[in-house]
Image (tube, rainbow, N blue to C red; front, side, top):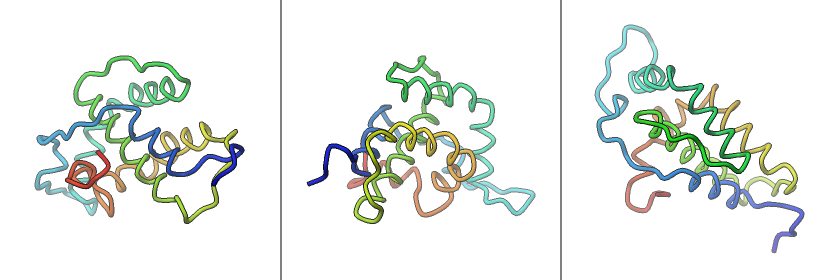
Length: 145
């Protein structure tokens, strides 16, 4: 049993994943065949183009959630992008369970913040729609949602 001085990766991930209700956006451009004029994968480019104008709203909502508040109501597609970010990062954090030592409880929100903001800016799109994890994995039977 883990001491109350530590928080499990599973608990960190579940809290993040369930903080915002998730629904599959079947019309999401990255779920379609996308042809690009450069070397970037089509789904990644489509995701980044859709997400870009909403990043300040989404990151503001993330900060509100981490500070214990209710995020401002976001309209589509920003609400979907926020929920996908939360589900993706939640799944990633849960995957550390049993692999990495449990972090001290005092850094719980710091870890979540780092992954939801800093890590996401660099790796989020690839992990969410272009690599080993994908939006369809979140919503499939037996997935996390």
